[in-house]
Image (tube, rainbow, N blue to C red):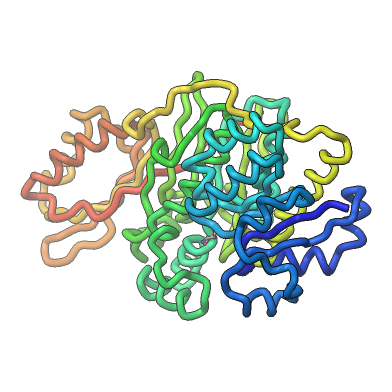
Length: 431
Ligand code: HSE
């Protein structure tokens, strides 16, 4: 019998408890031992009652769990940095294995946690921390371990994918769709971590660390959210053959890693372009496997519980074989993190300018002087002597584009630079 303790009986915690009760026989067969839920740590007793936790299994404090030598696995589903970090590290020092869904903690404290896990020969598993129910951490560490991973591109936030999908399909504005998503319970009351890209940034930091075997923390990730995307940008994207998605991107080139989260123009025929609503997906390119994509629900009670339970079963197998600590930290190397300034990309630029002879030539001249070559130029509307220019550049350096835009902003013929959005996935390499 393997005894587990669940910390936190919220949405995911109660999902794990439900799944364990629902599939207990199959879970016991797959792990090789029955699993018993011995303790639940939760201040809100009502939540425990709703999840069907017996009174006697509700711990008075974390010490009940820490000092119980029969507890083999601690499942941390509280979230946030503290007290989760203290609980996890104290439990590992007592020889207990850990399963968590806590992306905030791993993206910031991953190195420290893995060192403590290794020193204490315990398992630390965290499949549910990225993309909820989609298996991606375990595949990267195991089935794909023979590859050099070139890129990992994810739609890793359901809230923003829902908002962008509605904006694209219904031509509505960001604020309008966000308000509706909040009303429907798809978006948090405080949606900033989602819409500003931070949630996706934590997830791509974790995936990049694993894919490229070098520690990437939240601070290394360039982050831009979706709040400035307008129906006009989405309409022009559509006309030009693209769809706007919030992408979380990790790439390794010549031993250097670039990680970024930002809205992007994605070709409509890219596999990620078909990922709509609250769904998540992770597109991986490896030198042997080529292109693959993992798709599914990136959040929600039972999908996330599915990942947590998979980790618990894996640890039970390890306990039975006495092989804990087998797959620990995979950051064997120390690769340089590249700043966004070094990015070479194609860009979409939407600007409002004065509509008179010579204006286009003047603007093209500024781009040319900064090594920014234009691939497409469209003049979309013209009223009261103003024109809206839609430009797509060839691949240019981010730094060069930024310098050109600084000059353009100061010119009297430029009324506004309305938006600048990177293109992604335009030339996918055949392997
Ligand atoms: N808030 C996240 C999302 C789920 O909208 O996808 C938890 O990471």
